[in-house]
Image (cartoon, rainbow, N blue to C red):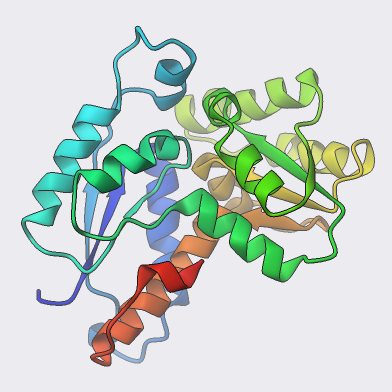
Length: 245
């Protein structure tokens, strides 16, 4: 392949599977050749991102991801995406490891939210402990000019349980738990829009999208952006990652 992109995934695998499913489902096709050209790296053994961010003595996920990026860079993809919000804790180090443009998922998500919900007063953030601890999304939300809420401890515990107990450990989706989290963020914490700051929550959204709440699904946004960029590549247009934000 000469014009393709690389997907660095496996964090977790069901979330990566959800990204690929949506990517293929949303691509306009009439024949096999209309699907996109991409390489999937499902690096499931990358150390847990949250565990390392909370406790730096735990194995770092940076070295294996740097290795992935450098290996893929030899193949010269046009751009790369990392299907894990929490991994963007090391975004600067990861981008510095390669000349290939790497999409910044949290930045793209919040810049999209600003365009889609310019009149939102308060933004809710639900994510892993690691993503909340590293303030990636909080800083993006504040820089965009919005108030934000992380809910209360019970909500954060329920989010962690949905991500780890249900999806990562059991490979199951608990729709009721997901809906209850969204409902409480909306009704008790007055959130006009809720950011899904974890790809497992994007998986939850794919499997249980029948609810009335406004959400910003970072993975879904990256899917649409991947299709847009690859379509331009096929037309021979030069892509500029900086213009997607």
